[in-house]
Image (cartoon, rainbow, N blue to C red):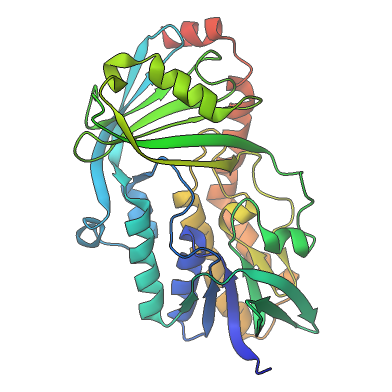
Length: 350
């Protein structure tokens, strides 16, 4: 069986994997991306980003017009008793169409020289000296550097001993894309707190075009879909005319970064590495940043032919200087907020 050889193989074509592939390919390295799904953006999310996300992703506002559904100028947070707090955005925010967004990211990676194979789940990773052999759909691939960008259920992390099964702290989420939502504010996102609304979590309404909205919820120790349906029933002003268009459910990492995200010839990026902001569950920007930083470090390591973990750890140091601290601070804030009673949340809102 012929073996295809690459400088780097990326498992997963999400924001982190596509950004890594684009940056490393642009430096002249041969990069292969293996994606198990047939299309991009399978995992549901609120789809909120900031202008800085576009800057980190090196996407112009003209290019972004393809995938931006709504510009966001403020956020409304509702306490359990219904008290509303409005927070004006300091910078531009957007709700996007994630599938179109990832398509743009994929096109940029391909333009830089990366190869993307959809519907190609990577099943086996075999370390051979200072390389990995990757088996996907009966085909063998060889790489100097293996990148796990395959989300919270990272096959790379689990099979190569960087994560133990069941050790990752997650929150289950569920979301409808709905039409005919009677939005309070077409330029504002909405967040609903309270143990009756979403135990140890929150519900959200993110406006999109044409009175459509992402309506979702994250809860701990309970069924997200049950609480989501309850939330919709209990807010008739918003949803009496609303109709579901799509439904999705997934878990989100909220426990912070994994203790070990590099090894010899191996790096984890994005949600596979735990690069998600625990308090909000947002991970698009933090994952893109992880992919970009990892690619810069990988480029230097490949050039020097030194892919030992001691060399690749420069990625951790660079990422932690801002994003790692932000994730740690957010985790601490989450641990405080989720312990508050509804009465205490109401007091804070006054």
